[in-house]
Amino acid sequence: MSPVIIAVALIAAAGVAAQWLAWRFRLPAIVLLLAAGALAGPVTGLVQPDEQFAGLVQPLVAVAVAIILFEGGLTLNFHDLRESGTGVRRIVILGAPITFLLAGASAYYVAGLSLWPALVFAGILVVTGPTVIIPLLRQSALSRRPAALLRWEAILADPLGALMAVFVYEIFLVTSGHHDADTLILRIVVALVLGLAGGWYAGKALVQAFVRGHVPEYLKIPVIVTTVLGTYAISNAVLEESGLLTVTMLGLALGNSRIASLGEVKRFKEIMTILLVSGVFIILTASLEPRELAAAVDMRTLAFVLVVLFVVRPVSIWVATIGAGLTWQERALVGWIAPRGVVAVAVSGLFAGLLVARGVEDGERLVPLAFAVVVATVLAHGFTIGPLARALGLASGGRAGLLIVGANRFTVALAAKLKERDIPVLMTDRNWGRLRHARQAGIETHYGEILSEVAEHTISLAPYSHLLAATDNDDYNALVCTNFGPEIGRSEVLQIGRDKEPTPEHRQLSVTLGGRPFLANAGGLHSLIARVSEGWRVSTTVLSEEYDAAAYAADRSDEAIPLFALTAGGRLKPEPASDASGLKPGDMIVTLLPPAPKSAPKSAKSETRDAR
Image (cartoon, rainbow, N blue to C red; front, side, top):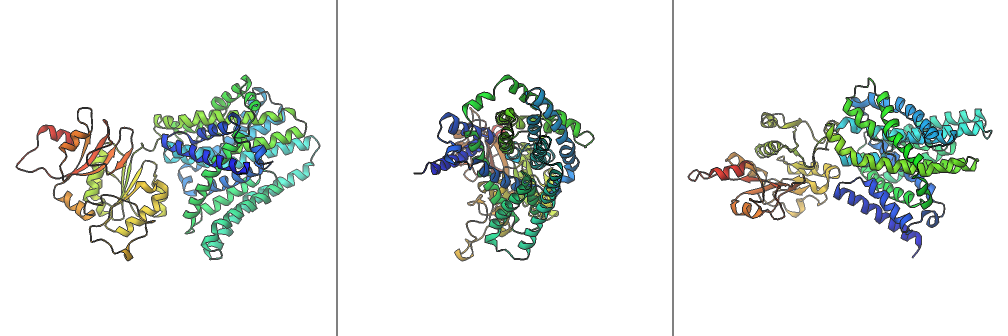
């Protein structure tokens, strides 16, 4: 078998395995990807990109970065700027130049680079990057405003930092006599026009073509990918790396349009991005030579990394956000979190070769320096973003939470009991009157259409690990679950059906629609509502060493209906087994219990257990 095919298979397997392990054990995915790349390349030698891909590493990485930045632009919505617009503008317009100046001085005086490599590297350090920020945001569940600040900065700073590095390099060429100044100014102007206006209007042209039916559904994604690659190549032909700005603007234009198929496009691009980020990180890490790794661990490099972490980033953010309306907690978090990723490494590799070819010998230090910064920032920020957000009160929720669509007696009773146990709950309904009992119980509510664009921009899904669709319209429940499945997880969207006769096969919904059946054997939603009306109650029981799963099973009424289990680790499990098998001391069971017989009042001991 071809060694190239083996290398591709190894890279894909290692990337997906690292992503899965990160999800399973709640670890920063980028850290595991770096470890996987180091094992596949410098440690074992199984993957050697420079040999196996024969000079294709740089263009492959460049194309991957272009698609990643385009996908990042798709995720940016101008509605987010209502709360964080001033902060975003300050961080990008003021923070980037401050970072450039401080990083350049640090690279020159601390890292010991000569002037031009130091300034080129300063531009590269402006980049934070969606390849690392977005996985961290997914992991840490930040509240809306700091998450929006970090996401916007990461996506806008990527092309901005790359262009700064390009401008510095072009100025170096002019001062060294390789370029004419007039030609440089003309190229910069044309590149900016192509990047800003060209990318934006290319996106608008795609939207018009889709809306007017000029492109069939099955060709939309291929057309988008082709447009991304084409606009990127055209811009880069004018000025190196200006294509990053073009594809970002293209993504912004598409992401803020109102086309029906945008959801499918975003999901496909997100899948592509996960694969590309995984592959690129492993390829770039595997490309490192052991001597380059050794060169990245001297004392000057260590001192430079510490200055970047504890001086450059905090100072630039604190100065840039003066008067921006942010709290000190938000400024502290954003001032710490700035991991560098794929773009920093890729652009460093590009300019290292160009500078060395022009006779600047210490240009070759850019790659090991970039990797040192990437590894240090990914480790430092990846492992601290969650604890720091919680310490500053900027985490939007814990591990378990329930978003309930449909207000009725059963769901209000369930939500009230979960709220009593400090589990995040939000109840939403299109009928104001139905939410009355929920409001009276102190439950957080949202009045309106959960599928609307307004809800998309006002409801943060971060605090909720599960969704329960419990309206009296089974088809609407299925639509809600289908819509939120990709966001929350197919196995975490739950659907209660109506109590009626089994639906004939020719009238059943497709298995690809709807959510995971919930309480399928309880007789349907109306039966559950009727039970609560008759005096059934939602109860919680915490297992302990003295009162374990066996004792719970022995005490449990045959009519009782287990609803959820909350593990001591903070995971919500729908419909635990009736005998509580698999649960441990510290886990909590939420149960729907029948009313106690009037002739046999319960003992104080059982009342205490039910009230837990």
